[in-house]
Each structure stands twice: as structure tokens, then as C-alpha cells.
Length: 416
Image (cartoon, rainbow, N blue to C red; front, side, top):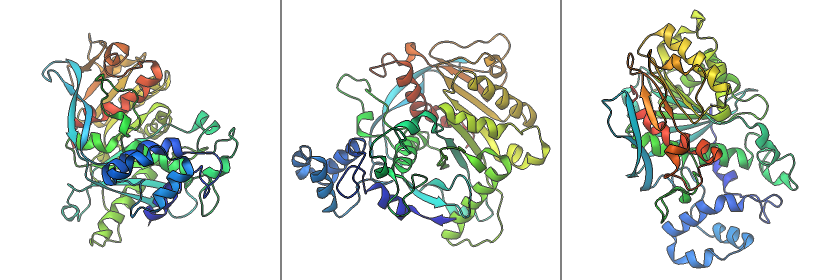
């Protein structure tokens, strides 16, 4: 594995839609980051920057002594809305939201895998609170997040097959869309790790839009010391090796080896990893479902039994959610009651009873904990829950909000 973080940041900061990278523009997508950056570091320039056209803005950015789009600038302390629970002693728990100041302290490294492999890039976010010197024998903890498959989004994003001027989205070195194209790096890595400025609470005490998933904010707020992993999915083959238990485990071992070797614990052998959680959002469950399919095969017990400890579902599409419940339940039934299965959705799976005890049923706006096993739960999160949280509680807005809020809940309950 090779550290390509510098290349990725150079690509991100050469924003499409300027004279340097003419064609389809992404300036509007980058502006929330740019304006927040200027307000924080160059406040006296802000009024002038706010009225600049795109070329003037890009020219201004080139005069600065630091890059605007980074994996650390947005991990600053600011007020963000997080989930909490009214009473954790109940089986039917009322989910609430509260404002909290959280400052994630992570180092994000982008690793490129060797050879002709899928996925090629893996985003690794290492919390400063995790003392690697304590893991010389392995055992590092991981959370793997499957973002949505690219699917219909390739019409306007990523490869933007229906858009004029889409060549501006190609990477500036090899001229390819994937995996170094601007959209892959911005929408898959940066936006999932951080919250944009307009995710903050507005004057009406509601949120207009969940712009970004804030994974690092949620991990920090849950006070868990876990390494976050985002595989950058392929437009055609999705998660590739991350969808197979043996190669998934191999990649995590290689990431662990890279991190340990980098800090001075040189070991040529791949060591066992610690606990692992796997979550997915939306169509990303196609990847997690594929990963769980072989849990009945004892040949993969090192992954399913020893490493994989928790699985989380964040608003899987209808029918895909049924498959996820079935596969997650089968895995948990085989490997024991301590395995954790948590689902958060606006759509109730038809087989949700597999997650709950006999006589229990989903309750609107509540997280129902299995009364026989607290490691299983289901939260039904529809308009009744979101009506006072986001200004537009249509299905898509709720869909985007669920992973932006509920990783915090899942990790707060976790065994990490």
C-alpha cells in the first residue's frame, strides 16, 4: 500500500470549473468549505471573497499559504446536532437530538492498493487518541463504511456521462475519471468524513440540509477510539475485494501493517486485527449484503467470528433492507449473542421481527431494543421524528439525515 494523500489533496484543490481546469464546474459544491475556511483563517478577506466570480475566487485561493480542501481544516470544534436517548433503561427508547461541541482529532491518510485491484483507494482516518504503540501485536479496531454505489449518480456526477464539459472531472495526472477524479475524492471521501457549514443549526433551530455525513464528528462524539475506513467504490464493480470476507480481512490487516510500520513497529507478517464494525448507507447495502452472504461458511470464521463484531444498517432501500436483516441475523445467530445488529430506517423491513423479541414491534420515532438481547435493535425514523429536526422532511432529506445522525447512536452503544 502507498500513501497518496498528497496527490489526492492536490487534485481536490484544483477545482473543476476554472481556467486551470475548464469545463463542468464544481465551484458551487466547494464554496461552503471555501467560505468557512476564509472566515476562520483570513477573516479580513471574507467580504471581498464572497463577491468574487469563480476565476477570481480560484486565483485568490492560489495566493494562500495553505490548501482549502483538506482532511483536517473542517475537523474544527463547532456546534453540531447529535442524537441522544431520553432513557436508556427502557426497551422502547425515545431518540432525541441535542447540540454539542465536538472537535474530531484524526489523521486521514489515503492509501492506494498495489496491482489491478478494486477498490484502488482506501481512506483511513486514524484517531489521535489511539496509541499505536499499544498494538505491536495487532488488534487495531476498525469501522468500515460502505457509501452508496454510484449507479444513477454517474449521469451527473463522477463520470457525469450526460453532462457537457465533464472532462474537467478527470484527474489531472492520468486523465481518468476513477479513482482520482475530483468527484470521487470530494463526494466520497471529504463529504462523508466532514459536515459542511450549512449543517450547523440555523436561526430557526432546524437544519436545512445534511451536507456531509460527519463520520469523524460522530465517532468523536461517541467517544470511541476506532479507525474509520471508506473504500472508494468503483463505478461498475462497487466494493470489489471489500465485499468478500477473506479479502476484506486481508485489506484491514494490510492497513494495520501500514500504520504500525509507519510508526516504527516493523513487522513483515500480517497480524490479527481487533474488533470490526461494518455499516452501510442506501445502496451501499448491496456491498454489505454481499459481504455477509458467506457467513455460514466456516472457512471464513476468522473474519465473521473473530473480527466482525457489529453491523449497522442506515436506511437501506426497500427489499434490500429485508435481505440485510436476513443476512445480519444469520451471521449473528451463528456466531453468538454478543454480535451486534442495529438498524435505522424510515422503511420497516418485512422481516424486522428477526431483530426483536417475541411480542415486540417497531414504534415510530423510537429505538426498540430486543428485550431478550440488547445487542439487537431497530429504530423507525420517519416524518414524525424528523419534522422538527430538518426543514424539509421528504423521504430524500430523511434518507440523507439518517447516516448523518445515527452512527453516533450505534457507536455510543457499541462494544468498542
